[in-house]
Length: 225
Image (cartoon, rainbow, N blue to C red; front, top):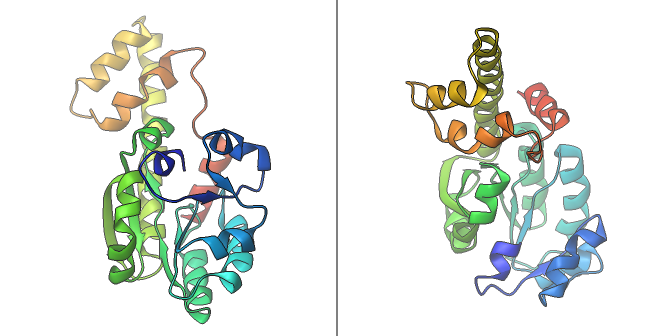
């Protein structure tokens, strides 16, 4: 939302935890008092929530009050079953719907360089692409409803496996007396180098690195897979 606020889009926001929207309100962004008020103010509705249940609860209130011809975009990691259910419910209310979860860290979110994995009608993606382009560097259309949600699980399987592999490799190196920073930099210079290794260095090496993604959320994603 902060990205959109800085790029000329008229913006209204809402959050289940109201004080989370305070920094945006301080910048002059309109904060809706309710989901129906948000829906009535918006041609494009974007949500990013913790799981499928949260998404269902929010969209069940949004969809009956959406503007005719509006477009819904759910960027949550819900899994394909929930994504298809939401798309079907949106269709009953005359709303085009996209599942568009993202790959990337909180730092990439702030930079607007996430990758969006999109399922749903191609014409709906074309309609909202200017908005998504402020949030993501790439918007990859993968197929019908649920395709983006399924691809996000495939990506997160790779992330979970990579997390585990890096942790095991660093533990092995430490047992051999190799300094963690040296071991990490060697991994990053090897055949397994990746953007993930590049931006996760502090997460593995710094004692005070902020938590960007909880183990509970990763467990939820792997259970969905």
